[in-house]
Image (cartoon, rainbow, N blue to C red):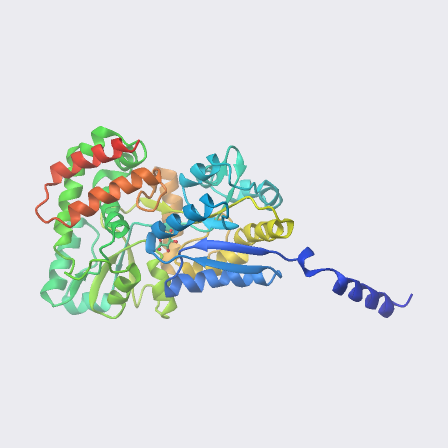
Length: 417
Ligand code: BGC
């Protein structure tokens, strides 16, 4: 048979094959809804659709993901979970215990995840020795974002210590700028609290407090200092902060209204989306006093058991895509995070990401690498919720006593254990 007619038969056979044998649907729950976050997640959607699959977007707005987790529980309880959901840290174990998560061992073996991922990450992604989630990135929580032009106008110096931070805030205030752009939402309040804790307690005691839940450290003199610093910091937050989204706060620094924002490096996604350059238009500094430490927040997609074989194929392709170098490169440059693969080429990444990767590796080697409490990496969602309540109540009460707050923190954590 001539080559052309063989080809013609092959082509017509392919066209007879039902499309469903090749392609499935993946429904993906996430909370990446800010302008910059959306740009990042769009890259994943495209890579999945390029493989012929259908992407069903299940985006639930709300920074930090509390709203998304509530919606996910409702869907799971009604027996209809999505194919994939952004579930992080110890929560993955809780979902695993419910028996709802699918095993990804085949993909993990073929792509050699065991060789590509740091051991701390592997532990989190596995349940009962099986991969049930795929890691997307590594975010660093302990960052301070500043607008250098505003700093120059106010004669303020980029801070490296907490004292310098308050001195810069005073200068910014005196020059008529909003010193600190903050959104009054529990997860944002606790993001600031956690950065203060990492600096004032140091990484060892931070771990004792929020991973080991050690009563002595939770109620100790240094924790009282953390609350006192949080109270002082509240003096630099504007009266309209209540309910403000984190990306609106980022915009205030970007448009020169405010001088600083304390936020994880997803804030960089907003700067990148606006075409701003790290190092010149804005600066990223380790949160003052936390140099050498790295509070990590790993985004991950946990996979739910599915009945349909085509959809299972789409789900596996999604997992393979997420661990692929193309996704790790493009997504993370848009998201503000660094790749989770240890072998990834970082040459296309900006100065903040380069610093983040160097600091990640150094912190992993010297004990400075610690899980973020505010972003669900350190403890269960129950402990996280208890901390949020105490921290936010304290933050909003200018007369609250730091000593009492430390006692309340320990009591609230004990009550949910
Ligand atoms: C997530 C990030 C997200 C941020 C703001 C964090 O908890 O890990 O992916 O960008 O919340 O919503």
